[in-house]
Image 1 (cartoon, rainbow, N blue to C red):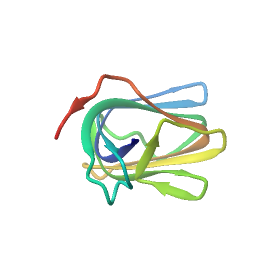
Image 2: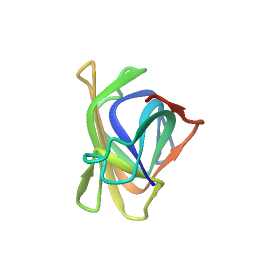
Image 3: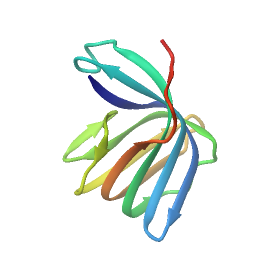
Length: 126
């Protein structure tokens, strides 16, 4: 079974930067479990808290007001824009995260060694 994080409609509750590492906490995110591809297999949908980490981060623009809901975005890695981020996700190369929010603000950060981790137990939605 495959698992993927969907960035759309995720709720960003916290953004922390320590040294050059950015940690983006999603207090609610849709996590899909499926047999085929996300676009082809409905699978099951779960709500979980998630943390996105990017080292050596450079941030463009201002921080969005929080909490805020993602209306569009992707994790860029290896030349691909991942709107559905495969889980588990931990890579060594360069990456970027771009998030647009319900209030019209946006966050764009670039860096390296991206990882995405689940922070809470899943709650099934369907």
